[in-house]
Image 1: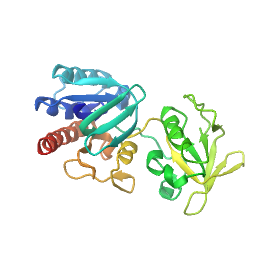
Image 2 (image 1 turned 180 degrees about the vertical axis):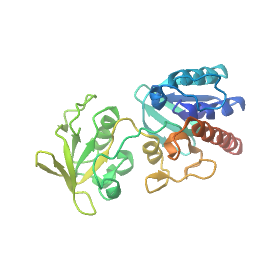
Image 3 (image 1 turned 90 degrees about the vertical axis):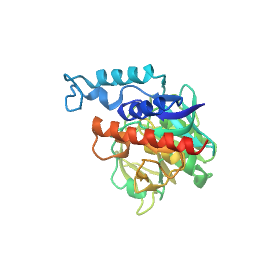
Length: 287
């Protein structure tokens, strides 16, 4: 177990790690790929750069800096996070990672809600956390929106509780091996059914599927998805954060693009520094 578990190894995560490492704490950063920085062709609006560099180059510089101070890195996709009262446990496709404090720094997936009204139905038949809400759909017919490993994780959680699970890929080909018990529906979606509460989906070919619940699992689990799983409170679609970027779960922080606002490297680094310092304080006060 590490002192600080950081999910995400971009600017916010590495910035947080530098402070924790210099405070003598053991740190592990778990992340998948370069993230949004990979799309940055050239960065020149960041303090201290003698000349412009690509996002990937900046990512590698930050990683080497943290490794030099003793940080451990794990390349993995995290699908679940829970707090057992003493430590945070993150489950990835390759392993399990633990920390007495946890900083969410996964960046922003920039994924859009695919259908109008989906956000408004959250809590009324639309959910983003199978671990949290499967209990409410015991014996009922539900669907998972997605096509990858994260969607597979949610399907497996639901199969233990609900009556049936349908995977809605919205026209995409599944990229994970789903169990035979999961019905796979590849046809594109047109709209949600129901007024005020979810009742099913309408497909573009005119077919309607009656369902009791919909679990959204697009792409990889986002920072907010994982915060929900760990029990953090939300206001609208965002986790409630204090001035140190701690959620309502003690020891769980969020920093960088995943908190919204100005999606810039400079902001992510600053929020990571604040969260890193706050994590140090939290651990010292809760030895």
